[in-house]
Image 1: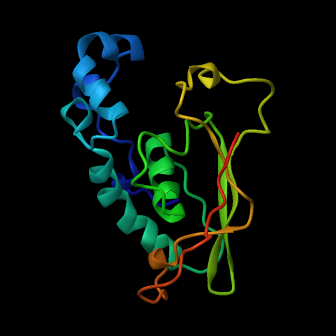
Image 2: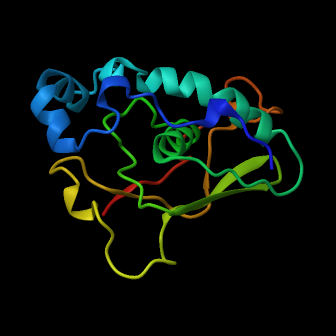
Length: 173
């Protein structure tokens, strides 16, 4: 087991420990800015871009290793990693939806490509999960095609200018 502090959850500073309803009541301007995809320090802590800058170096390092690797992390880290890998990081807010607690995601190498096998897979849990009903109207939920190729620019052996067209086939659920 290796621990890496760079893979900790996003720093929400003054939002830490608050319920969503409390955040909405105390910081309505920030909540609205985030809904409009403005990249701001959430709660005065980190922005989504800050989080990506922090978590991508250790993830790139892991992608360069051989064998099977398991990463256990919080939702913000996981969503950020997959958003970058799938090439949809600029689509905010939370284009990949909310993660179900304890959901699984998996990637695999096939030749020189990195492929998505699972994302937000919670089949090991029974029934609907808390938060499922909280998806905001218009935000949608993505279903990702198994076997979709991911952004090769994140792989150590990647060439500049690689064609990413058709790398992900999102479908509105």
